[in-house]
Image 1: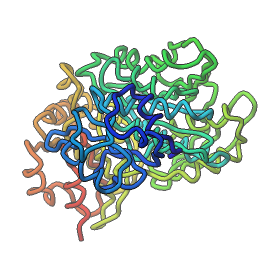
Image 2: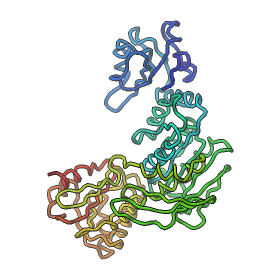
Image 3: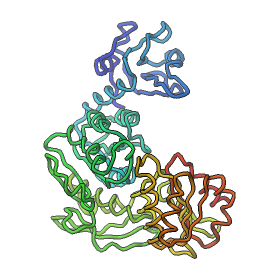
Length: 453
């Protein structure tokens, strides 16, 4: 982090100071909401959780050497110096926005319904071939995570890649006020967070708030395979990417390599170059093309872009391929919505095995169309040729119903415990098994059981 003074922080958050005036010139070298990491040179920002209130640790942080606290309540003498604000969450965002304003570097904001983290990692892999790159760690992409991402910026960084995730209207506007991206990259707009956003048009409107906080000289990088994005013409430069004819940056001659990824030709107005994506999943072609579009916009060569794409690495439980017990298991338990499920099913069908089996759990936050969307995923799986469709969870009965109605072989379990108890009656050696569900379903337990020795 690029250091600043407590006086700077006080001005940035428009708070009220309590403490010794001399401390205002103290240098802050780190910002944290974890009391265990508070120490000399740190600013401690306590957050209120469902079980723990960080304000209870203010005194301990000051005793550990923290420069100051940023508090929602009046500090006791042993909790000073302190900056008092109405909301520590809003103040953290304000501090992050001020900190971001200290850097005159290209900032790339990434949004969309599916594949944000994958695309963030792919873009970072590309731009890091020429630039010292700052990026979102893990998936800290919401109103709590984005400020901590921005606070990590320092003078060594030449480009920043920030993932921006939302679930309701107004959130993107607030994130954009912090991030102020120069380039906005959209992944697929799909059926996610429909409980709050209504439909895909609503999703696009909510994500499109990002343009409100961008300069007219900014750049929109849009998925040209997505009809909603093709129809989007923000008041700034626009580049489309995808596999469709007419995309500015287009993937052609795609060769699937199974578990070893894929190869394709990237065509753009000034030429073409070959790339190899070194990870499993047909959806990675879109992430690679988005990264290519950003690289080209930043003046990078085809060789640099290809080298970056070749160095991409999968993050967490996103299409992670595991070989165990003579099976191929695809662990994709981080999140799920209809679009990501269909992409995962397409990838499953590229694997060679005795049978292709999908174990699908509930997809959450889909609103009133939830049952129909679950049914559609089951139908898609059966029609794609999956040999056995397994639904698990109270919402996934509709997955089973949809697959059965489409003529597929189906099993259904009301809960994960029932599935785990019967797992070895469901799968057998030689199978290729996809495990996918929303993160709160904790289907990592299914993967662990499948892969344990």
